[in-house]
Image 1 (cartoon, rainbow, N blue to C red):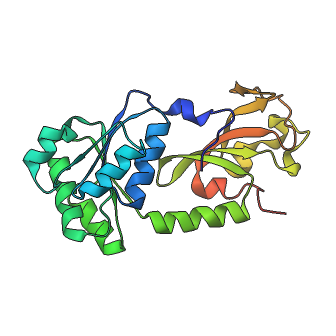
Image 2 (image 1 turned 45 degrees about the horizontal axis):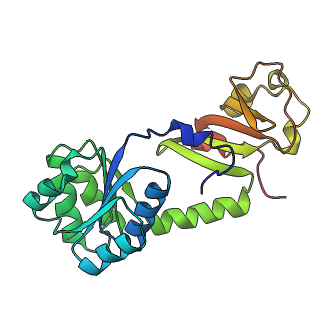
Length: 234
């Protein structure tokens, strides 16, 4: 889910980051294409030359090459080890996924994100050094459930598995009340980073700022506390 109007959360991302995506199946191509559209430098790789050609023809990455990610020299020559973040998107092939993750992590890549197809797969990826393991199908299902039950959440920036920054619509219960009156930190355990006024955000709004129903506010807190906000579908 992306917030395409005011781009508040987008400003939190480092524009200079370089990414490599290993595995150009549906998930890998989606990651490549999204990062490329956001203006990041992205290198896509796959052992299947047809998938590489598809990514190039559809302009889903800055560069794309065919290689065997279980071969350390191939990864090195492609410049994979120089990237800020490597996404191992080989989820359906256990051995290739684990060996590739091990290769890039042992080579010193600081941030390695790996796709897992099961809980056991995820545990193995963690053991060989993956900094983050993702379960795309599971997470997509959770995201769909969230949009159905909490449509007021416009965007989410995950700080870690337990904490997030989210853009939400101000609920009716908060309308025409000041931040001091709402006392959100005491009641919900969250803090407001910014509120929207017209087409601009006011960062660190004062306690006397009055919220308007349907406007946008940016809050930070634990996922459990954010879930406590009155954002359910009516």
